[in-house]
Amino acid sequence: MTDEAVNEVFKTRLRTAREQRGLSQTQLAESARIPASSVSHFESGARKPSFDNLKRIATALDVTTDYLLGRVDQMNSVGAAETIHRHLANLSAGDLKLADELLAVLARKGGDRGSDR
Image (tube, rainbow, N blue to C red; front, side, top):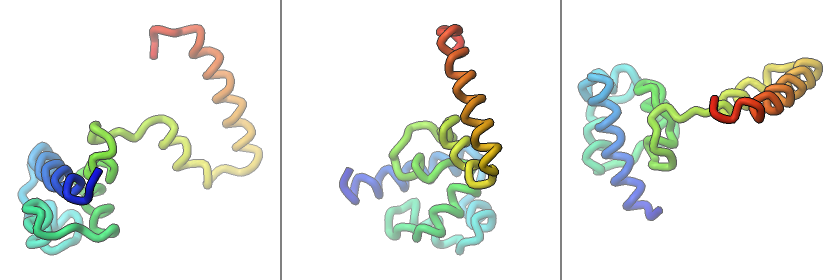
């Protein structure tokens, strides 16, 4: 995707997410701890957010940065793998082994369910 296309997707998705959350530009700015004028500039495409501001906006809107950038189509597309990965750094070696064994059991069991997925 070109930079121009990403910018188009970003400004559209930013406005869509903000409106779906029922927030004004000022309310989003306050929640994301950025100047209110920045939200206006981002939505018009006049400016692009820094990485830190992108993260703040995504957090304030409860969406992923991937959604805002057009990499995924679901606002809250954090899947099981991403959720599990987020917690790996906090597990001990023993807990990692237990988690691996549990996931293996669930994967085998999942093959039995087929239609539950």
